[in-house]
Amino acid sequence: MTELRNQYFELFESGFFQEVINRAQKEENLTAEIEQLLAASYFKIGNYTDCLTLLETLEGSFGSDPNFNSLYGAALRRVGLKKEAKIKLENAINLSNNDNPHIINNYANLLVDMGNSQEAVEILENIVKNNPDYLDAKINLERAKKINKSTTNPSTNDEELTDEKNIESELFIDPLMAAFSTEEVELNNRSRSKSIPNKSITAKKYIKKEDKSKLLIQKLELLKQCLDEKNYSFGLQLCSELNTLNLAKDLTYKYASDCYIGLKRFNDAEIFLLHSIVINPDSLASLINLVSICALKGDLGQALLIYNRIKDRSDLDANQKHQLEESIKSRDKELKSKYFNFV
Image 1 (cartoon, rainbow, N blue to C red):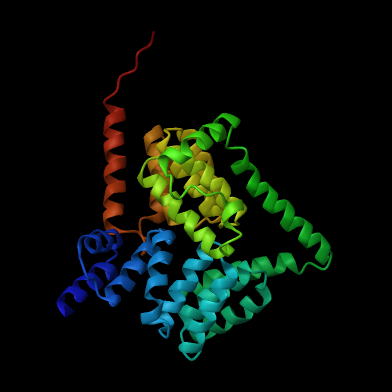
Image 2: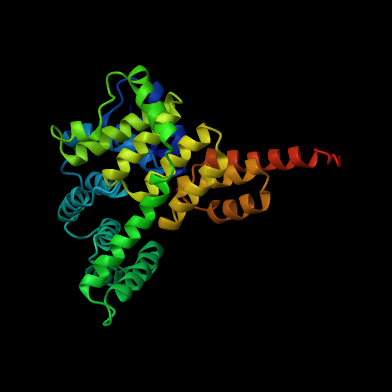
């Protein structure tokens, strides 16, 4: 069993996150330690739904582990459950005796998201002071300073700041709400009971019985099922429901883009990916998909530009990197073999 554990850890440390997932899905009776590594692999590739589902089952085994709580908090933050994330990250900090800069860095990021940028700046400055080579903390410090400066402008009062946040939120919502035509909604309403009869429950009905965080995760699981079953139209409706549940906007747009890719509406897919990336420029999953869409459309220059931006990232799965390179080469060869027909 120790040898199997070491194999998984070696794959994870080498960046083969999808390979960890592929192997684990074929195994039976995985140890809790390997399942925790599986959850971390899901997180690395941006599959926060399966990550959170697995972490919930492992909490009894690792509830006192600071790294487990940090991962749990980071995953909750990524889907927009900030209050729940704060509890987990504070647990992680306490369990690590306030001595793990990586956990504290994650906590500072959450504080920025929650509007406590001044406190985040103070925390990150201390991290950078004690860990001058910690690049991620330096980047986050600059982000926190920029946001803090914009929110502490003497000419801007609290009421104006609230109005700006509301306006910004509405701007983010508009593209998603405009994505669903009346025909699509009617079609989804007619087909949903046939497609997934046991789980087709609207947010309005379900929220009376379950708290918001559980409902959001359940809807995410249902959306993943829709994508697996290629039920992309219903998937779009779930994206709309998740938007009303305040799923992180970059994820909402990313999932909507996945649905549009499945429907072969590549222009729409590209628009939603760009919205996702504007909100979260470091979203690896969205950037990977954008490389693929640009290559598919024949815009190889843009595909290469984005690929070069992400190719050296430590969280890019090694197999994924190879697949992206091959898809760009293959598409380039295909385009060069075409001839122009001037008729």
